[in-house]
Image (tube, rainbow, N blue to C red; front, side, top):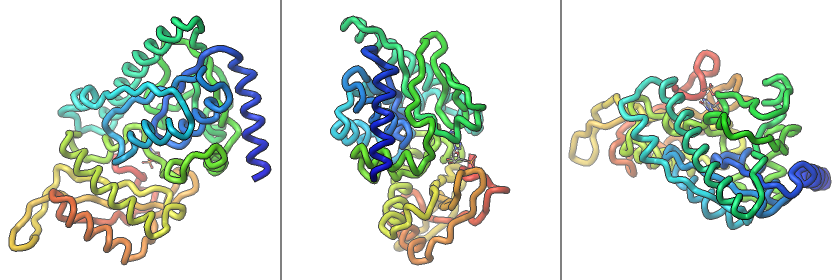
Length: 326
Ligand code: XMP
């Protein structure tokens, strides 16, 4: 629309003014905000930007590929990918406490990102320009919540994996500071990002790590990824993407129940569907997803994911339940 074109043009101008001919890096999380912020900066200053994507192995099916292939193809961004799955799984081994998981994932993220940022700094030094700026996908509600300050590190630990590397000093570039989520999505569309990327559900920084109740292992991640992909596919197919705020699929990895399939008895795991509607995630209500859609999801998950023999529905609002189970 006309106003979106204006917002984009104005931001591009401001970004160019702030960054000048310096170099800038952006951490892509797979989420909407960092993707749109990165795409804006790319449009503004081209190859002065290097995007860094830390793949912690806790993303959903197809998300890493979406960043590595589609995003690069559409934006033309220079991308440095760090495959850190082994490292994260090792650090998470034996851990079941939710806050402990968050702490570990945050800490590992900082370490891996710090190392990658150093490499980008060194590599760019060879081209004679220092990296001075870091892109953050801070939105207006985040600014309000954190007191409106700008600077080098006003990041809520809850909404971002980790924080900034302390000994790497960057000045923040925050092109989304004045926008609400729906405006960010429109800017993303204006920049040509595909609907699957722009209309993604909010996804927590610690990813599937906090949707496996129990220890996080490679096998369990694989099971959850399959079940989650089915739920997302069927909700999209039913046209519910924009009605549902998000729908965590939670694997109760330490629970087993008896089932029957074909001629045989099974002893598998349950998953919980947690579709919620919400304005801002502070409060939420469970979504009244049509029964036939739920039936389809349930049938497909129990047929296609061997280890899962039961699908349950969470009908708790927030409060008292949080959206995530951990
Ligand atoms: P809860 O579970 O607290 O979630 O009702 C509210 C919103 O925040 C997301 N969430 C997180 N996001 N790191 C994040 O980046 C986290 O540790 C985290 N925990 C919850 C959740 O997906 C929902 O959108």
